[in-house]
Amino acid sequence: MAGVFDNPVFPYFVFYATVVVLKTMAMSLVTAFHRITKKVFVNPEDLMDKGKGKVLTHESVERVRRCHLNDLENVIPFVLIGLLYTASGPSLGSALLHFRIFTGARIFHTIAYLFALPQPSRGLAFFVGLLATVSMAYNVLSSAKY
Amino acid sequence: MAGVFDNPVFPYFVFYATVVVLKTMAMSLVTAFHRITKKVFVNPEDLMDKGKGKVLTHESVERVRRCHLNDLENVIPFVLIGLLYTASGPSLGSALLHFRIFTGARIFHTIAYLFALPQPSRGLAFFVGLLATVSMAYNVLSSAKY
Amino acid sequence: MAGVFDNPVFPYFVFYATVVVLKTMAMSLVTAFHRITKKVFVNPEDLMDKGKGKVLTHESVERVRRCHLNDLENVIPFVLIGLLYTASGPSLGSALLHFRIFTGARIFHTIAYLFALPQPSRGLAFFVGLLATVSMAYNVLSSAKY
Image 1: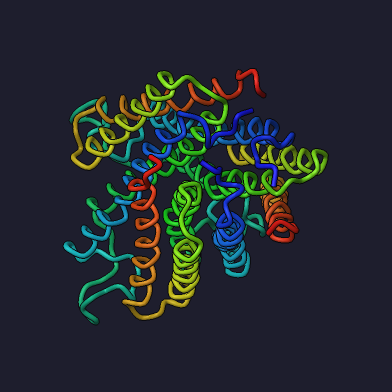
Image 2: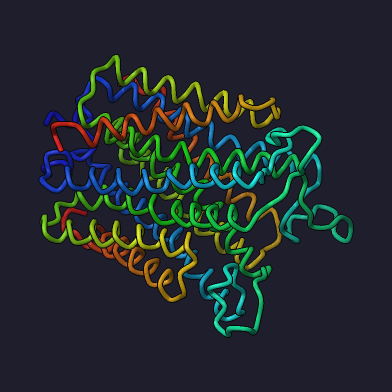
């Protein structure tokens, strides 16, 4: 087995994996932005005006947090399965198809979630991303190497 | 150092890691199933009958979501530590023991959680899985290679 | 490309990655400790005195859980991006700087969260950790190898 790092697919995996992880991490900053602009904090020590305001939740913040958690539930499995998939020696064309469909689907999922686009836009984006990861997992498990 | 991918343990790691990540992802589908059959949605745009129904939570949905989060908290560390453990060159017998105990414990944990089996069944499954990962981490840190 | 596992940076990555993942997993035990000592359970089957007590939440438990989720949102991306960063062949000095700043920031973040230290201590620790991971991601994307 040639090893994942000499694999011509690896540089592409690195690029798409980094993009989707950065996209996931960006949710932290969007959450912080909403918390600060709307003065919605969940910890007493975060209240900026001592004595004023109280700990509460706000739908804008909760929406970003749900989007962030959905990213964790989908992007992390994509990166883990994607690494094992890259190590299984897929063709470059097939690998790029998986990486690009997943990355596109998750970027669209974030837009659909944050702007509350009408369904089934978000649901569709979620399932397309899920299918890309499951398809990679199927390729890993059915690879002749394992 | 021989590298993780030439390691005879690696194919087994790939198999068990893929199984537990797929199991984790399956929680998304179980959540979707409960949301749709019980018409319990957390986003206004997800309501299927416009004007009817309202955004609410439901214990069946919350239970699956807790199980999903517990998976993220345990399965992702297993895969990350497991990859480093495989790279540390463990014996095949010892590695298989860790992988199988963890995978078995987490499958049982999911059953115990979703069907609300009496404690300490779920707590035991949780701790057995945790111990398997901690034991791998101990092996990694005490490996002569690091 | 030399491969990540022959890289002199790899053993250091393994050490710091294992430490921060173990720290994240320790949050499970802190949560369990608070749940048991304060008798705060979220599942009906977890109630220890049948008939007595009820399912509820408690601020101490919720605080640890928020800290745990924040770890998942930051430590997992660090390990994933850190692996790709190590594979990109950074200098040992630069890599150690990233790993140590991140690990220190996250340990301090946990202390600031669990003991509710006055802000901006926790916010600062969060941003320092985030910057370390983003800086590694920038190095990965701008590496001549990709």
